Length: 458
Image (cartoon, rainbow, N blue to C red):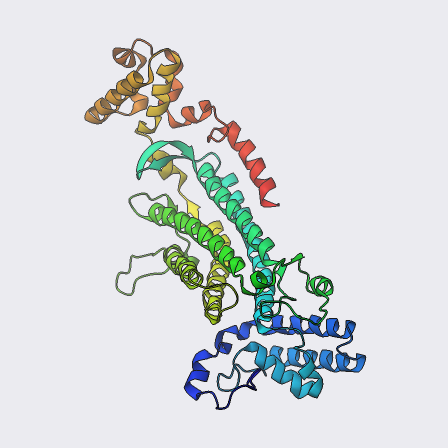
């Protein structure tokens, strides 16, 4: 069924019809197209375009069509239908007869597809936000469990300063929390109604946009018809939020992959989320983390595709916009699939806290704290930096741990060392003396954890 054709003298070419059809991918908007049509029909009866009897026929036809969809009786036939809108309209004509021909009054597919996509995306952002909250809870549980597990923080992939595993996991939490805020903003911009904008310049039919907004649960109406029918900023915002989330996922996964190697031995991979080798019997591979890391390029590619789609478009709706759905739908599928698994995978990880502690036993991670100790005694920082660097170098030559150094040895390097410095020769002692609110000190960690639990439920 075609929704146009009066001004054409020859039939559309078969190959071109297949080429320009979008029903193979926009079929997933069927539920939302039915929802918009139901609200539109009620509105048309309210402004006396439909009679009461015609409305009953249309609403019944929409119910039948919805049942057909649920039972798999609606088919995305490229040879018959240009898009999901023509399929739904054809089915309504089958069930409601001539009343269905009155339904599109005052409405363009330009605004209809935008409304459908916004309802679709609103539903999926709500789901993603719920999944993100679940993942945050998994992270908080792990952070609490490993709050006292001492390990090194890394810069340039070199051991830097002592932290705790709980502190590292909380860093993941706050990244995800920013992503949650990003998705909430994308949801706010998605929940704007384009209906009433027509193809680009509105309609002479007195469409009751306030009624439609209330009926469909939109929070506000577009202020401009050209903008409302053609804007894809809401898709762009969603994909930007998805890329941000995926980048954070990728970073977490990279940490887990590294920590699972024999070079770190910081964690044991759970059997239920790992794979083996077809040749090497000893292998246990971190495939979940590798796949999530790999999908980052796919999600970023979808954003790049949409940016390139939008960058050269003139004002108003253009058929190029048909291609926005491919990037959107694929990203929704990937993000939701990852979020279905990630909380369970992270909860199943077993970290080897003894291996973590052993990796910092040499004590080089205490160097910053030792230099800062000298600063508090009046030594200029650059001089203190030089003194501690010399101690680290001498320890390496002597295969000596920082904790093995006696106070008398330290005084050889600087007269400003005193007994107060002894706790700072151990990573755990350094943690207890950290002073800033964002640091991994035990006292600060409790405050951070409380804030994180509050943020998770927002």
